[in-house]
Each structure stands twice: as structure tokens, then as C-alpha cells.
Amino acid sequence: MSEEATLEETPTWIVASVCSAIVLISLVFERALHRLGKALERRRVTLYEALLKLKEELMLLGFVSLLLVVFQDLIQKICIDESLMEHWLPCRGGSEASAVAHYGAASTFAAGGRRMLNGGAAFGHCSSKGKVPLLSRHALEQLHIFIFVLAITHVVFSAFTVLLGLLQMRKWMHWEKNIQQEGSSAPKMIKRVQKIKFIQDRCKGHEKVAWVIIWMRSFFKQFYGSVSNDDYVAMRLGFVMTHFRGHPKFNFYDYMIKALEKDFKRVVGIKWYYWIFVMIFLLVNITGWHSYFWISLVPLSLLLLIGTKLEHIINKLAHEVASKHAASQGEVGIVVRPSDELFWFHSPRLVLVLIHFILFQNAFEFAYFFWTLAMFGVDSCIMDRLGYSVSRIIICVIVQVLCSYSTLPLYAIVSHMGSSFKSAVFADGVADHLRGWADNARQRMRRSALGAAAEERSYWGERSRPAQLRSISF
Image (tube, rainbow, N blue to C red):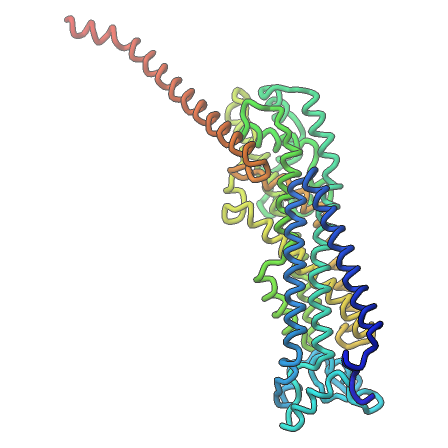
């Protein structure tokens, strides 16, 4: 056959069989997502919202696939000068000519000298003009597969990271239960915070060392015991005393997990501007640059920076408690005081944005590796040298593990050390009730402060009045 067979030349039983298989697989997948959604809607509303976000991403992916299929003939008819194919190549040399063909050189011939059938028509259209197609059909199909692999890899690895992080935080549930069972009042909890290792360990020697050493301690702390029981107790009390004063039995663990699941909805999606990074990454994949190895260092560096910052916030909170407690000579109960000023640009949300970018870029590295391995093989020049490829994968694995077991749990608790609480994790009615409760508590505190000041003025006024009257009587 000189050309590929069309539907006019294909047996009907083949068309019906293939169509039935595709529809059946699609229906099974759709019903599975539907049942999963029903289960999550009853039990974990926040995860259900993340599933809806996942469906949106799949719909976008399907739309992109449809556009590639519809416009593939039009793209193939775009002709350019063959000299343009000699610049910005991922591969060079005769042995790598096949890889060049995958990226757009439709004039490349197969080993037997035959032109690829799926690009012949487009090549004939452009060769008559002395040019070559912008992108061959085979290259377009491979690009199509890469976009699909990237989206799926990002969703799967993001879910994997959050699930491992939740498993790592399960021990916090036991800490919360112990606090609930103890039923300690706020004054007792404050006294406990001032004596526990939270202050002793986090503030040991801070006055005697340079700030560089303090940051180095924060850097290494993220690799072992990033959040201890004492850290949890202290930060939990600071959050409760700031936002839910008078309700020391507030279940901080459940609130924190719901907030993390709510954030997962943002992480599982792919923002439109992340596709700009994809275009840049594909653009700089030039032979000899080893671009993807250097790019893989970006998420690792950002992750270490975020972990160091979050640990430093905990150290700073402990140092503030110790300083205020020492200044008051132990007469006043001091607890952790959450504040947006502890975070970069006074924005705890910025940390989540950076984590989202890290997970996406790490997913890009994994997706590109799996895609090139499947499309071109391990010996392809696009795979880069073995040392660079192995190093990239090792770095990606380190980022994935460190984010799951250290950075994500750190973010889950330290992100609540901002000035406000996340009412969105509650149902609308509960959120309104909590906001009203918090406002009333602040008003009561304000009235109490004003009342105390008025009593003090009245007291000193009464003390001074007899002297004034005596002076007037004389």
C-alpha cells in the first residue's frame, strides 16, 4: 500500500470493535470517577472538590487533544525553509537524524530509504515549494502524547505527595487526642508551653550565635523531626488562643487536615501560566546544554529554601515566647503569637504557590523522562548522557520524598501561624458562626480592656478628689 487506508477501505467490524472498546473504557472510567465522587462527597467534602478540579483538568486535556487532531493537517501544511531546521536542535549528527525527524524534519528518510507514510502528503506539498513541513504528523502525535503524560504525571504525583504527607501527619492525631483527654485549661497549657522543650530546644544558644548559624540550624532541622510533639502543642495553643479563645478543646488537627485537603484542590490543577514554563523548557532543550539537569536543581533549591524558612518561623516563635517570658519574669503567661509578618511578603499563601510550582516542575522532569524513554529509547541523544539522566531522576526522587515527609507537614501547621484562620474549610453556616464567635470574642476582650481602663481612671479620680475639694474649701 502506497498510502494509509481510510475508513472507506477498512472493514466495518474493525471500525465497530475499536469504537466499542474506546467507548467502553471511557464509560468505565467515568463511572469510577462518579462513584469516587459520591463517596468523597459524603465523607470528605474538601477531597471531593479536589476531584472536581481533577475532572476540569481532564476536560481541558481532552480539549487540547481534540485541537491537535483537528488542526494536524493544517499544521503540516505550514512550510518553512529547510535551513531553519538546522538550528536549536535537541540532537546533532547522522546517528541522531531520526530524532530530528521526530521534532519536525519531515525530509528525513527511514533506514530503508522510504519516507514515512504518515507524513508523505505534507512533505509532497512543501517539497514542491522547496521547503519542509513545520512539524511532521509523527512528531505531532509524539507531542500529543507528551502533553497527556505531563498532565497525568502531575496529577498522580501531586496526589501521591499529599497522601504521603497525610500519613506522616497521622501521629499528630494522637497528640491532639492526648490534649483533648487531658482537658487542660488555657492557663495550665500556657504554663506547660513555657516549660516544655519547645523553648529549650528551639532557643538554645540563640543569643550567643550569629544569625547565619541560626539559619543553618533551621536548614538541617528539616531533615529530622521537623515537627515534634512540643512544637505541635505550642503552635496549637497559639492558634487557639488567637482565634478561639475560651474554647481550648478546639480540634486543631481536624481543622488543619481539612485546610490541607482544601489546598490540595489548588495543587492538583495546572495553572495557565505553568504552560508557559513548559514552552520555555521545551525551547531550551538544545543539544550540549544539558538544560533539564540544571532545571531539575530549581525545585530542589526552592524546596530546601521553603523548609528552612518554615523551620525558622518555628524557631522565631519560640524565641519570642522565651524573650517575653523572661521580660515579664514569669509573671505573665506568654504563648505563641501568630502573625503574617513571619512569612515572605506577609503572605502565608505564597508558600503554597511555591510548593505547587515545585510539584509541577518535578512532574515535568518525570514526565519528560518517561516519555523520551518510551518514544526514543534509552540510547537516544534526547535522553541526554546517562550521568545527567540518572542524576536528574535521583534529584526528582529526593524532591518528592522530602516534600512528602518534611516540607508538606511543615507547611500544614506553620501556614496557620498567620494572622487569620481559614474559614473556607468549614461549611457556610459553621464558618459564619465561627466568624461571629471570633468577632464577639474580640469585642469582649476590647470591652474588658476599656472597662479595666475606666475603673483605673475612676479609682485614681476618687483618690485625687478629696485633695481637690480641700484645696477649694480653703
